[in-house]
Image (cartoon, rainbow over all chains, first blue to last red; front, side, top):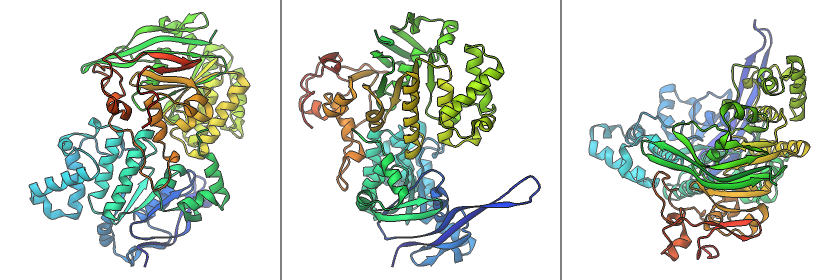
Length: 264
Length: 327
């Protein structure tokens, strides 16, 4: 049985035209997407801007209600659950965002950011200060941060370290699925490799299941087991990562591949 | 004679935490029509180098401590603000990384595009508008007659960057400074923008100073490359040599760390550690604490190595003992 299954997931946005109602147009942002993920798999999701990657990730994260179709996690159809149950399930899905400068609360120390994340899964630790401190420092060490810096604020860290904090925060609630949305695009080349290595290690250590969204195929090729290519709301191609580079089938994949800057 | 000759540029920032030597003795030339790259990590001083040339460094805390930048019969570093205004935006154009923050969201594209023409060429509004429409057409904006009256938010990221390029080139500058112009864009859009810059450069004969941290982009667009680390150039060469026969360990480490250069499944090579704090004195080679070659052969000097020309046009910091050692 697959771990995560997307069944014919569809999201249409209706836009009113003109000032007084009148006609409407429908944007099919996500248009019948079916995908399956095994536990511990990293799926790369690529496509140009506007192809529906972000809408799809919001659907998976349960931040948007699908127009039709459903997300099935470990055999459980999330759409069938009542709202308060979905709220509880939300901690099973965590995100890592592109810009670690914008995605961390500048007024919260690393400790409060991570403690908040851990408490969503282990509320009992709220009354157990030393247990919480231990959990926070374990989490920091897991992502390669020195736990002495626990009282520092995000602006005191470099870009790469901030992204490590963002990754730690995503891991805090012990998610079943991590959605990484362009997690290395804003980082320097040398830092990119560090973060990619870290994500790979975490997958190996924690058997993490991950969807890795990017427009940069060379990065996705390195980290993903399989790559899904998206265009105009549809998945047009899914292949093993290396295979996709050797035998791209769809036009859009060929376009994306030829756009990668090459060292000559 | 080169179009622009920068000699021994030093820009320091006087902060509460000490003097930050953001740019510490940088020299380079730009020939007419050439594309010169400045590559390095964040904080290495790439942008400060270029902003110093256009007097865009906030002073204080910044201060240009030394240097000359001969551009024609002018020295850019000694111009007063009034003289600089005749150069900036007229003879030297600029495009930035994020086109959303560098366009004014309250003004129509038309207002922003004709402004440089009204200021520098004293054209009438109608004439300027005509030129602006032609310029939008040249950068591939469809339907420029209509689109010129749009606001920045009505364009996509790639289109906005095209507008920025049109704005920077509308006065036919001799030099275009492009500061990470494609970093915020998708690969496919990046490809289009790079090709557009190249195409306009060929049509207009503009020289380009291209700032980026992406080595692959450098290899595609630049003729000559300056690799910058901790406020200085560690290696300078034509683009072919930089990639086929890099000498300095930093240049080689940077190239090694590109994910695309490595086989799948292999652990990615990373440069250990962080760049040095530029507010502190750096004894010896600035890269030594992160350099795997230097670790193998310790005992480097206490002075920062000088750039030496090891073959015609190929300069490298004279880290003797490190240059050819494999790691």
